Image 1: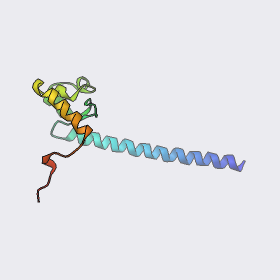
Image 2: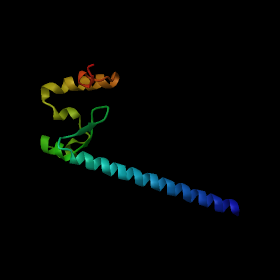
Image 3: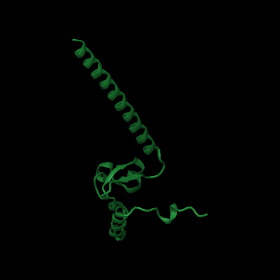
Image 4: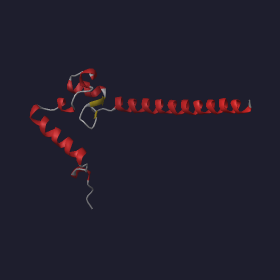
Amino acid sequence: MISSVRDASDRKNIERALQEKNDSLERANAKFRQLLESAPDGIVIASRDGRIVLINSQTERLFGYSREEMIGRPVEMLMPSPLRQTHQQHRTGYFDEPKSGRWARVST
C-alpha cells in the first residue's frame, strides 16, 4: 500500500515538473515571437535545406507575400532570379563547411 502511494506521489511530482517546464518553454517561445514581430526589419529564418520556417510581419510587407505563401518555400524565392542559383550554392557550401565571413572578423 505504501509503495503505491509513493508511486502516485512521484508521478504527480513528475507531472508537475513537466508542466512547469512546458509552461516555461511556452513563455520563452511567446517572448521570442514578440521580439521577432517587433523588429523593424524583415526577418526570415530558413532550415538547412533552405526552406522558410519562420518570418515576421515586416517580411510580408517588404516582399508582398503572405506568411502562408512563404512558409515551406525556398528562401531563394525572395531573391532576384539571377541570384537564386548562386545563393543556393553558397547556402549549401556554408552548411558543408561553416565559417564566418569577413564581416565577422575583428581586426586587431
